[in-house]
Length: 342
Image (cartoon, helix red, strand yellow):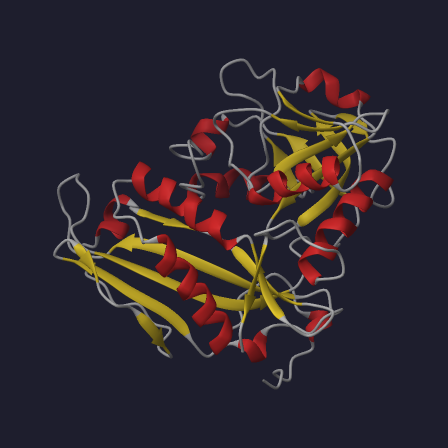
């Protein structure tokens, strides 16, 4: 399929409407067949469960054009699994995994002209989401739901791309900042909007949240997991039951150990350790890895030894390896890549 006439190198991380999206409705205890539509509008009751009690969840994944011209997605089965966890936590009906994967295939195939060409640095972002759609006035789960999935081409998540960003240690309680918290998956980002906008107004790119109970251990940012690199090259990521189980983080830790031959540690990370790390990065579907140059702890700046001006060598290697797997220039582990047949 011919690519759309878009200046792929200049787009940011924003919404650009594409031609098709997927819709399926849950009513009378079952999902309908679902299918593609060109209608981008959503019509629901003024008393819909999503509007009254925020009964909604979402996922995020990407489609890529590989070096040899194929269109692929990266580990979409894990997104289906994580959305299942979110639905169960929010008393919502689970959208079947196979139907989820079929919907991804259909949406990407129908919008193949919007998948950015290889080498542009842009990708097709896919957003599956679900919400309570029927009228609910008492505090209880909705009876009807809608599952939707749209796609939009995007550029880098952070404006600087892979240039180092500055973050701050956030005073806001992490549990309050994320509503019910990331018990199994991303449940509620709305409560994190005030802290992140407050950070932006004060000149920071992101927040570093510490654990709510003791404010001793590093948790995550508003929308990404942390990766640290010790001075001896060990890759460390925080262990916590309350942070988002990032697919990108899991993939990077596997890449670090099995492709790059690095030692990896998934453990509790004390905040007082951070000053001793050589590199720090934020990882997620949108950002892949973004390097952190400075961490501001109430006026005290922690400057990372490697990564003040550019991404450090270990994080660079991890990013290049993972994107190489996604783009087809490096052989992927079995099951990581799902090709879309156009």
